[in-house]
Image 1 (cartoon, rainbow, N blue to C red):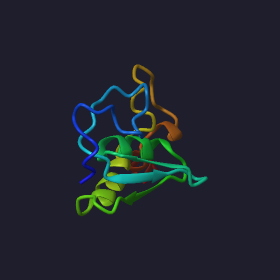
Image 2 (image 1 turned 30 degrees about the vertical axis):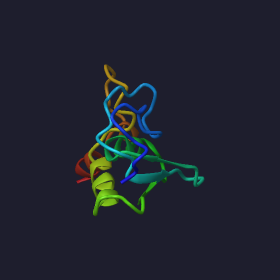
Image 3 (image 1 turned 120 degrees about the vertical axis):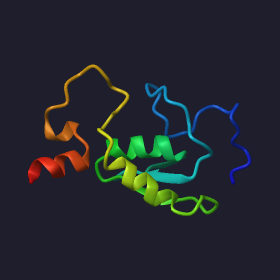
Image 4 (image 1 turned 135 degrees about the vertical axis):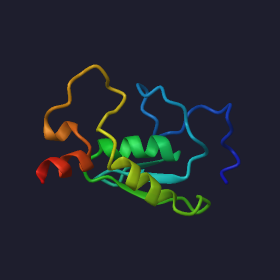
Length: 106
């Protein structure tokens, strides 16, 4: 799997500069935005980015572990957009995770 990525390598391309959480492994998925611009990333940062995009999509890389894209998609639904922004209230619907919005709609 992506031999060029090691623990001493800089963080994956989808990690936001303000997101100081570590990568969880080698890039496993591609995240595309609504205009089809994309980048490859680890499952952790890919889920955080996907949660922050409107119209974002996730695709597994050819050498990704089985189920990587599904894990990212599922995790993103429980993550608030821009999770690296802390110390602010999240009360408006667009500030909540997809699953939280769905729970509130019931």
